[in-house]
Length: 433
Image (cartoon, rainbow, N blue to C red; front, side, top):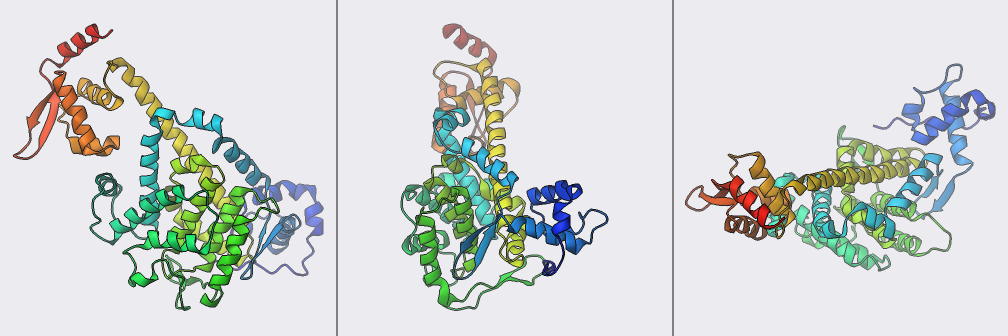
């Protein structure tokens, strides 16, 4: 359970705010956007914890922006740290310069397919899907029929992400929201009539995954349709500027808060965040596995919701968490791309005209590991391509005399380096300097 924060009425905090000795402490706590359960252990000596908390709350409130909805009023104090992250995201997530410097054009389709798979799998795992990444990726690549509910959730998420990209230029409407929910929940709900339909009763609560306590009771179903129309208007209107990423996070929070569906609310909320980022030109979002980062810190994700609700709908906790997740996903993408660039640079030693990068990687494996038996199924998963494609790559290397086919059983064929691999490799290089 989340510890309730103290009420601050009547506490004299002005002198604390004016005391320069405490300025750095207040700035540090605000940059991290600590809730009461952290503030009380980071209170400077000589001050009552409740008084220090009151000063923190006041410092946030004086510069807060208010976003009014019928079911709640959100407040947000944009800290220096938040603004720094927003600036960094703006500089890296969109535009021609970012696109050319982050992901080379020739590799984009490969990385895009991989990231969509990762996002679909992680988002489903957050909601209880138990299929492993390896099995899930193989299923998606083969476009195989899902074998169970977990696999169906992953296929649904995968299809929804592609749907969102195709509809990124549309405005948000109740119909689009219902279409997204229908895609996400297809064949996974106890009652298929709940797919793409707002809930029709209040028999729903959100449970704490650890304690089993009730963590959130959504507003009554009677307010859902009206609240969704209001939320759509908020998203579509740009009369007063709200940073697009902040608006995307508000959209994410409000869908989760309203809990308009019997099930699939979390996946729908994250999908809408993804959709709005694409809509506003943050193209790099397609290449990020945001849900994978959230999945790794699911406890913090849930707390960010609860802190906001328990602290008079102070959205700072949820914004702070999501900005960190976004930037961490970006950092992970950069690390991955740097590693792939190093791997590609290492392939230059094996560069042979006419061979693609997958074939070069296979040649490199054979050169470094003489006794390796290569299976097309393993390469399919490792290189993120279809079995047909990888078999074509392998057969091409057999024709060049670099590989030899090896029967593994009555059905399966493996591949290993040809007996004269080194001699043949040298001959090919001499013919193609």
